[in-house]
Length: 424
Image 1: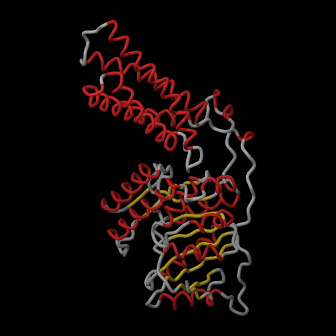
Image 2 (image 1 turned 30 degrees about the horizontal axis):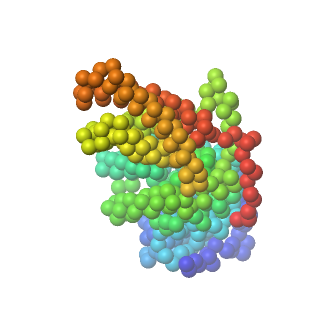
């Protein structure tokens, strides 16, 4: 990657902020129309409203118009403004380059059109400066946000974030808002693992941060859509879908070292008895996800049972159907309900799950045997299905207790192994 940093050197006689608290990058490509008014507006706002030293870094992504010349002039006139010239396009590439070379404590970026109201900038970076949070994002999708944009962009934005929630189990609300910040020490660990160099860069960084148990602070923003935006929506959507597929594969195969990052950067687990009224943290969410997975497993078990009963008989059909669904149920709950990632202990968890499966088999088979003894004329009717549903419900409750208290028991902070320190 060819990077020309000659424009970032201070001019003689002009003071530059040494080691600023905040370095805010503004990626641009052929923005000769908006660059100067936006940078002057941003600079004036920071001077009047930000109680910390700052730097504005214009990241010129291979512009072919007058963007570089305008950026050079702004860097000469405004002491807190620098220009970095990149030979290749890509917002992610620009952010990685600027942030990796910055000496600031907190790194941020905003879009050159300043669609986000700058009043949200101090609330964005303050939790990072104080050390309370690790990353911060502006969100257009919370109740406190005020957004003006067309129906098409609204639909695409909400649809994209719903897709992220369903496919990658994310919890942050808005991956695409061009208004984010990160602590420099966190960036040094995350950036080498982010592969995308374009628009998916933000999403990939946020997913890695979330999987590493980092704290992501969200700020509701006022946002007005830029009608002159030149983003190719179709190409961006296709690239994002490819990015989701690539990142999902990397997480499923354990290729990304999120467990190592969690030991290095993640916050210590809360003690189970620290919750209100003695309720272990995360219980409502775990119950909801377990219930959904359980409903799918029950329906799958019944479908397989009905399919196999005529060939294998009731007891053998129940055995095969329950075994297949039990393996899938354990895998789904391992990842989605209890958040266990990577390949470590997969075989142990499946073996323990099969022990619990034996309990479910005893309950459901016992229900069928009892029905055969007490009501031999029930046959294949609804009574047999009802007996299986009732037995499955009982087994499901016992399975959740076993999963939470034994198989996927949350390790307390004082039981966790010490993290191994490595140099970044």
